[in-house]
Structures are given as C-alpha cells and as structure tokens.
Length: 260
Length: 86
Image 1 (tube, rainbow over the protein chains, first blue to last red):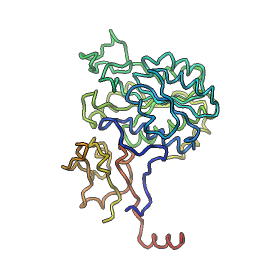
Image 2: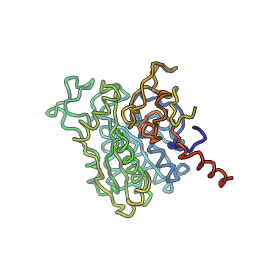
Image 3: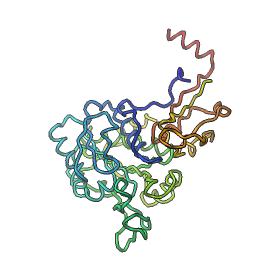
Image 4: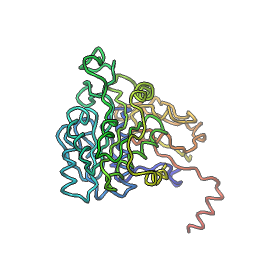
C-alpha cells in the first residue's frame, strides 16, 4: 500500500541507518522522539547536540545535527560553553544515567541551578549499559549488577537517586518531567514532554529537563518483553511519571497538546 | 497484494515489543532469520486485512523497522480525491 498515505513517518533529522543498540533497547525510541521534536520545532539547522559517554555516545551518528562529544559526565558543562558562545543555537545534551547521575552529577546540578538555556535529555535505564552492566546511582534496590551481584543494598549503597525531583527543585529549571516509553500511551506523552523540554530554553525561561525511563534487556538479563514489563511493575512505582516543574504556564503547555 | 503494514526485515531485531502492543494481535514471530542473525516478526497474509493502520507497532519499535500506511476509506472516494488533486 505504498501509494497510500503513510500512517507513520520517520523524522527527516533522524539518520535512517541500523542502530548499534541491543534488541529491545529503548534508546532507539528516545532518540526518535528527540528527532521528531527537532523536526517539528524546525531546529535541525540551529541545533547543537552534546553527546555523552555510554550507549548514548553514538547519538552523533543518528541525528543529522551538529554535535560535540563531551568527556564523561561533562555534557551539561560543554553545553553551557556552547550556548554562551552561540546564544542563537538550540543546545541539548543526550545522556544516560551512569553519565548524568553519577560522574556528571555536579555538572548537571550546577547547569540547572544556573538556569542555562539548554535542554537535557536523560535516558534512565538503571544500569551502566555500555561498560557491561555495573551498578549506577539509579539502580533499583535489590537489582543485581556485575558490581552488586547480590543485589543493590540500601544500607551500603543508598537508595536510587531521583534526578527529576532534584532538578525540579533547583531555581534555574524551567521544565522538568519524567516519562516512560513502555507503552504507546506513554510514548505519546513522552513526545509532548520532550517537546516542552526543548521549548523551555527556546522561550528563555531556563533549563529544560526530561527523564525517559528505558530498558536495558541485556544487562537486566531479561527478554525485551520482560524488561518492558519491569518498567511499569518496578520502575514507575519508584520513579513516578509526571511533570515536576513547568514555568511555561498552561497556555504554552496547551499549545503542545495539539501534537498527537 | 496491498499490505498496510510492512517490516523491514534487515532492521528487525526480533525484540517482539510490537507483538505486545498490536491491538489485533496479528503480528507473529516468523521462523526466518535476517542477515544479522535475528528472528524477524511478520504479519501473515491471511490476517493482514485485520490491520487498522493504528501504527502502534511503529511507535514502539526501537529500530524503525515498521512502515504503516492508511487504508483508503473507499475506492470511489480515493478516485474523487485524485480528480480534485489533478
């Protein structure tokens, strides 16, 4: 039915090439949502992507925008420099939880606290994916990883860090939300949140932050379908979805409701 | 045969997430392997008419392996639209 109207089209800014991700890894969905928002907001020519370290590192292969690769965890610091040197650019980072919540915690918090006009897309899969499944700050209590083979123990390693709540509490943040991409309904809601996270700095209100809960079937030692179920059964009860801060007001927020 | 949904078998990694979201449950795992060694999903010819072009499979697919097209509502309407467009 190729003569018919397409019910689904890939955004033009997304490179249509095979990804390096494992089967069922939701980085693919996350980066597609970013690409769709870049297309809708017509940012492909003025966007500058700051890559991070981890499985998210190859974002520069998949998005056809100018990119800078940052040292581990320092993407928000690099984004700060890029944005201040090129204020007209739409600057965003694409980071995983090992990068953003661990080694990059200081850079992330100070970037948000200063209210840099950048967007942070944070893909949280509760584990260090690329390096082989070590415990991350967001690893769930009881979750087995290679560095906590008996499961994360709250007494020794503490509770998983809730980054969106932390970022939302900082003064420079204009928009902070947590979304998931485990169901069609959640994917549609995630798209709106990513779009608002891009709109907040474009409207000169402050930092836009969106946390996307994603699976890592390989390091969770699960099938993709089991891993996807874990999102709704284990992760969402601890990491509640929702908008934690939105300075754009109802009018701006309603404007994005049009997009399905 | 006109198919409203097609899978790019070279992209499919057989994660089966599309099978879990299809409202008609018409997507099944095939017995074929692609060149990367992954089993690929398929919609069999006998159930492909049940596809409603909802594109849920395309939205959940992490590997952009699904293409979905809307079905023309009626053949006559399609012809009329073409005349106006021309």
